[in-house]
Every structure is written in C-alpha cells, then in structure tokens.
Image (cartoon, rainbow, N blue to C red; front, side, top):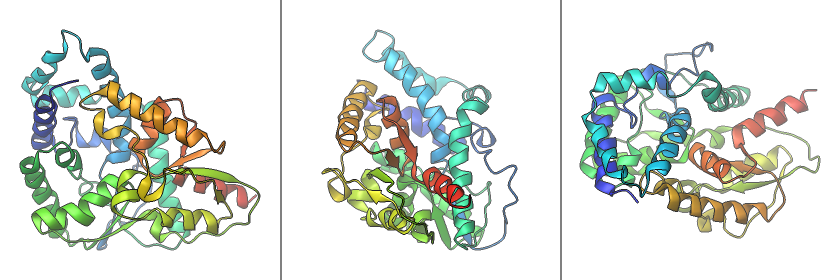
Length: 313
C-alpha cells in the first residue's frame, strides 16, 4: 500500500496546476465532442466532469502503480510532483491512444443521442466541462477540494449555467451534495437517465445492474435506471447486494492500494455473475474495474442506444 499522503499530494498538485488529477492537457482528455454539432448557448449544460474520458488514463496509471506497489521503488512515486507541469502535459498526449479512448467517447455520444431522442434540450461547452475534484474529497484533502470547487463553480456561474445534466455518479454527488455544502454553489443537477423517455417491447432480455455506491447508497437513485430499462421492455435480474445495499467495485481504493482494490472488485464480480445475466454499469470507474476483474460488462447508455437501434430495424 502507498502512503495516502503521497498520492493525495500528487493528485492535489496536478489539480492545482491543470484542473485535472493527471496533469493532462484539457484537450488531450476531452475530444469526444469534436465531430458533433452540439449547441453552445443555454443555461442547461451537458456536463461530463471528465470522468468517462478519464478511464483510459486511470487504467494506465493504476497498472503502473500495481507493478510498483510494495516494491523498493514505491516510495519514489511521490517524486512525480516534482516533474515540471509542461513535461507532464506533453506526456499526457501519448498516455491514451485513439483506440483506447474510443469506447469511452462512444458512451458520451450514446448518452447525447439518447437525450436528443427523448427531446431533452441542452448545450455543451467543452471549456466549462471541468473535473469536479471529487477524488480530493474522497481522499480527505478538503482544503484542495474546496479551492478547486470554488474555481469550477465560479466558471459555471459566470457563464450563467443553472442546470447540469450529469453522466456519472461521482460528478453527480459532487454537484448535488458537496458543492452546496462546502462552497455554497447550488445548481439543479439531473442525471441523464432521469431525463430519458424511451419505449420498447419486451423480448425476454434480462440484465443485471451494478449500482455504484453514490447512486445506490447516497443519492438513492437506483430506481431510475430500472424504470428506464422497464420502459424499454428489459427485465432486471437483481442481486442481493444492490440499491442501498450495493457492494463497492473497489474504485476508491485503487489509487492507494491497487491490490486491495482488485480483491474488492473480484468479490463484486462474483456476486454479479450469480444471476447469469449480462452486467450493466452506470459508472465509468465501476465499469473499468469490473472489466479488470474479468466481468463482461457494458455501459447502461451503450446498451440502451444499441437496443434503440435494434428496435428501428
């Protein structure tokens, strides 16, 4: 296990310098929208918080951390904070290949298509789509989290944003709960699946839904994706550990101890596999972790988009 302070200081330093946990160029992480003609004006903003786009970066970094954990090289990880900002940013250009980014960028495009199909009006401003800072809060650096949250909230307020349509549980929790509590910033926050209005006929399809901790335990939103699946004719094969009793995927531990994280994720995959049904996830971090543990898992939005496409044939 790495010393938590080492990891926290490294992440906090990157967030201060570049407004994301990896020290990456913003444009290196956020390219999914470039070939879409999305409106840019309006007070309702489609907001990714860069979480979905982060997964290829997270996978690369955690693989390296796992290799070094409990070796004589582990203490040297902290020296990463000494690397000049510009050098780290240049390295970010090569951290994730287009092939590695593609499936996660596809998820965001699928969400946009589903919202448009449901008649939801929104704008997208890549310059305002900033990381929420949630990992700083998760790891206990409240001071760094509050500083970053004030910056992000200030940018959104200046742009006249009132409503955020979020795509992941971490960003949703940050803006629904943490921003009002710690920096007094209140926006109307809706997850994309709360806004979907889709229909479909039952055809015997069954799925198992993995509830992320934030959606299941803290935001009490587990019923909403089940409503969407029911509306398109899909049955949910429940596991005992779901909703407010959901089991963690191991994500929160991976920056401090990749080995502990793997133990947790393998336990969760074993639970989900008991139903024998395909697994769906509503969180990019959960999906990445479950896949690492050998699960055959698909994002909820991609599943819904694929099913909508099949219904048109």
